[in-house]
Image (cartoon, rainbow over all chains, first blue to last red; front, top):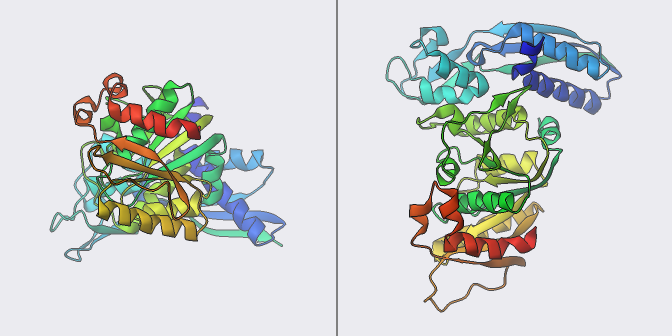
Length: 139
Length: 236
């Protein structure tokens, strides 16, 4: 599984689990049973690698959590002309640019423009990156 | 996210944020110069460029063809002995038309995915102003010590004093103030302290600095770097 270790999905998974533990402590939960995570299309996080990393890190922390992962299509809205579009309707990005967005989704503003007016001033309405949707546990 | 960010920085002994408020006072040159001086002195130094609108420390240090290595996150590559992280890796020669929320998200993401490892010192080059970057730093990395840069010019000095007031108000650690671009023929002296914060010293205006940018060996020979060394080494 060396290839898995090389991916930056691992650091994102660590971030998610640190936030889960923070939530657990803040809410005085004895145990976390389930975490629901939403992966945005824009960041192109590898779902299987991410799940593997989450499971492994949770094990290291002595946690047994059911992990549910859902994906969300990216929707963008131009602040200039108001046009709303799906990422899939944007001009096809080359692999290198897509990889940069994978590391840092905000750099999408450097590479993507509104299909109507070309403005880089758009809002990522949905499907940016990793979002914790819910944390279930027992108090 | 503060927990994971501070876990990432757990093996970094000191964090110095080079700020000052006004643009063009030499924050980036001081930040890059400081990291270079400390690295040459044998410290394990890192440099994080958080000036997303105008990243420039890579130019000052003459970076060519580097990209972080992926290993459970991103490992900053070494640039003249300094572990270096900047948004330029990801934007190449494009601009960064970011709104405030984009700045905050990008800072959080970068701090979460970067694995600095063991460092004696991490220098952060801050953007002008007290906007999202400063607020995020204050929120996430409370132990960051601010090094404030000003020039003898009144607008720069007054802007620096505004940020100083803000930092003191939130009890943020402040290492001191450096007066940059001092013109030696000017008789007026900056006081030893401003609002109780020590002025560490002055750096003379150096006409030869521009031609040495991008070349660390030549940079080290400039009067700018000699002055910075004198001013700063007592603090480490």
